[in-house]
Structures are given as C-alpha cells and as structure tokens.
Amino acid sequence: MTAADYAEQLKELDATLRNIEAVLNLDRLHEDKARLEQEASAPDLWDDQAKAQQVTSQLSYVNGEISKLGSLRSQLDDARVLLELAEAEADPGVLTEVEAEITSLTKSIQEMEVRTLLSGEYDSREALVAIRAGAGGVDAADFAEMLLRMYLRWAERHGYPTEVYETSYAEEAGLKSATFAVKVPYAYGTLSVESGTHRLVRISPFDNQGRRQTSFAGVEVLPVTEQTDHIDIPENEVRVDVYRSSGPGGQSVNTTDSAVRLTHIPTGIVVTCQNEKSQLQNKASALRVLQARLLERKRQEEEEKMAGLKSGGTSSWGDQMRSYVLHPYQMVKDLRTEQETGNPSGVFDGELDDFIEAGIRWRKQRQLANDGA
Figure 1 (cartoon, rainbow, N blue to C red):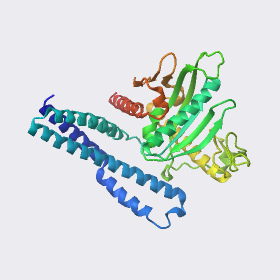
Figure 2 (figure 1 turned 60 degrees about the horizontal axis):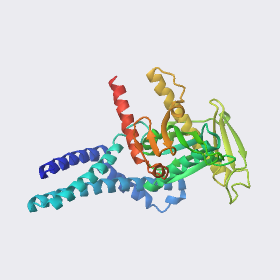
Figure 3 (figure 1 turned 180 degrees about the vertical axis):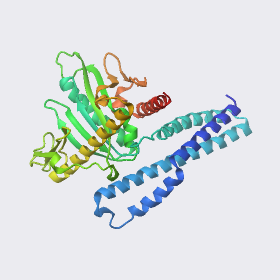
Figure 4 (figure 1 turned 90 degrees about the vertical axis):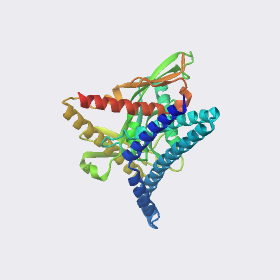
C-alpha cells in the first residue's frame, strides 16, 4: 500500500471514531464523571452501601469509557504523525509501523463501535445471569459450572464487579444452577446475546469407559430492575421458605436456616438465594432476582403482543446457540453468527469478546431487517 492509501484509511477511522464519540456523547460522559466524583466524595456515602457501590461502579465505568475514547483519539493522532514522518523521510520501515498501528486501531475502534449498537430499552442496565444444567446428567452439571467460571472470568478481565446470588450444587459434581449479577452499565445489553442453550461435546471425565458425551446448559440474561419499573409484588403473592444452605460453605453459611426460596404464586416463578450469611440479605437478593424475572416476563409479553405472536417466553432456553467441541476436534462455534475459534480453553477462560461482539452485530442486523419488513 502507498502512503495515500494509509492516509485514506486513517481518514475513515477518524470518521468512525467521531461517530462513536457523538453516539456515546463524550460531553455527557464528562458531566456524569464530575457528578459521580462529587457523589463519591460525600462523607456519608457509605452509610448506604448499596448506593455507594452503585456510585463507585458507575464512576469506574464512566472513567473507563472516557479513557478508552481518549486513548483511541491519541493513538489515531500518533498514527497520523507517524505517517507524515514516513512520507517526509520516504522510509518504508516507518510505513510498516503505520500499517501495524492502523491494524491495531481498526480492531479497537470496531470493538468500541459495538457499544453504539446497544440502544434497546433495557440495554444500559446491569445484568442478572442465570445458568442451569440441562440434559446430560453429571456432565451437564459440570458444564454449568464451567460456564459460570467462564462468565465470571470474562467480567474479571474487564474489571466488572460481580456478585453471586445463588449456587445450587449437584450431588456428584458441578452445579444444578447459579445466578449472579454483573454490576456495570450496559452489562445487560452486552450479555443478553448469550441467552440460549449451550452445548458441550467431549470425552466425559465421569465415564469410566471414556465415551464421548453431549451435554447441555441454559443461560438466561435479565435486566436489573430500577425504581421506575413499577414492578410491585404484593406480599400475599409470594410464599417465602427458609432452609439450610447446601454445598461448600463456612462462616455460618451452612449452619443456620439462612437460605431463602421465593415462590411467586400467580406465575409459579421460583427464585432461591443462599450465598449470604444473613437470611435478610438472601431474601433481599432473591427479591431483586424475582423482580428481574417479572420484568423480563412483562417485556416478552409486550413484544409478543406487538408482534401478534405467542412464543410462550421460552425462546431464550430452547434455542441452541453455541457449541463447545473438545473431541474429536477443538472448536467453539456460534450457530447464529458463524463466529468460531479453535481455542476452547481460551473461551472457557473468559475470552468471549469476539463472540459477544458478533452476537450484538447479528442482533442489530436482524432488528434492522425486521424493521424493514
């Protein structure tokens, strides 16, 4: 490529970055930062721990967004200077450096561009993620635990705070179910593309004959409710059961009746929480999850009403969306987007960004196609 070609690429990247800055509203981000810093410096901030955690989490997120945009703008400016230097000195070595910078910038700007596609009603919210073992016996329970670790590692890689509300352990190994929160803005919009049925194919470590086993686990992603949602739950519509927590514990978790099960009588929705030491804390966490499930139910009913369809609200659990194959070959493939990799161990260690970004773009394309239709 010539210097003129690189100059054109940088011009296109600059236009894309300006569009991202406009959509994310960089000025508003700076205003939010100033407001949140003022709230975070209040001497009585930690008198309300829930609010304090929300403020600090939002401040961390806003700082991260501003830092990413600033870093991209700086990198773009540096690439321009480097290109001018290459042209002035007619140095092919410097031109090679420009090419490397453009490759890096293109990937980073494309990743940032994905955030501009999150414009759904609840996309800006924190997320609740529920994982349940499906068909496949002990292998499915073990797979559910692998998925829980995968998502927690993904959040850890990004510095996103998480809180595990419930882990129901299977008898032999793994998990029957788990529920956790990702406490950062836009977590729901980002992770909602992970909803569906996940499939694992491998030589079962629990089969003494070393046979290949196919197992399944379901992932459900819900938006965290806010005060404006008006999800009121009358006390007479909820049955509360308390019991002793099971599985690994300690520090009073397994020695008192601290676990809580809430049953919403009109819908039959059941929520459990057992990871806190206090029954009161578990009840509060379970109530948040129940509110999120009712909000999702309401959202699905509204969508079905508008579409004139009746899907029963089970699509997120019934649709097989990704396969993880460990035998006879190594591959993870998304069945909707065709995104794939030959590195399953990396994916299970939280390297999910390529799959999530492809899923968000795929969803946006479908939305545009449906709107056009």
